[in-house]
Image (cartoon, rainbow over all chains, first blue to last red; front, side, top):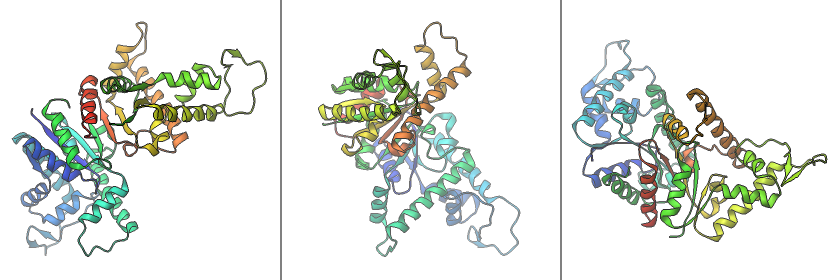
Length: 204
Length: 204
């Protein structure tokens, strides 16, 4: 088995947990927020800034800090979004070349298209996503269900727009994936173990 | 295991073969074109007419034959489409109540929503669908690739419009399904066996 697996996921669907468990079961590397930290380190931009760009529709604006330095001079006419995307592109290719791995989000399915990764999309029904977000929310979280649904939809909208901007494709269109899994009715652990079994046995 | 499985499928994706193999592996009933024949028998409409309605966007028009009788009297202002859908609705519920089964298409996922079937959508990349159609085409098939792609897209459009008309939902939107499988890279046989294994072991 030689496998690079990309996992795109709706917010609150358990995609991250699924990816992590799958990587553990397969004994391969797992990359998620580490990608953001590394892009920040390479580009000299703040982690929060990079994260904000990667989770939203790219627009041309300027970071308050570059690395840890407060920007006091006038910003250069540079598209930081593209700079971040280019770093992301290079980094993801390096990771995939280094070893088998699971990569969460960040257009990795598109960036690695030529090496044919196993492209998975994880999603769930809204009530399940709502419940999952409630469980993971800080104890002082005061959002109503309606506000939380709007919050979930906004995060997905950001991911979708970022994906569309750099790949030209619709983020949640099944045709860009090999497998789309609804996590509403089956525990994430079971789904990850099942998929791991299929991958290890060359069934997918 | 108590399971009713619905399979919606893009034309040329191998969804029918997948469903048939899955039913065989699980040792449960399989319903496909039998549904059309039975609706025709119950409604007194010709098989070809019923099939034409079920594979297209419903419009109000009249069958040339009712059963085997040529219609010589003026047509009644009856919506044959709704009549067919109602028969289909009743029949699919009867089949699902009778025993575990795999049902291909015909809005079964929607009709059986309350009993929570395992809802699968089968799809594939266009070059793979084209090749599959070529293999299954009659030897005198003379369509160019371009014509065949248009033919495939038209059939899917018909299915999509029929689904939309009766369910109000987008046919190829992953959120209506539990599992969406791209058959482009893995043999149908392997996919069906894999899924059968997961179902039998309660993993999905």
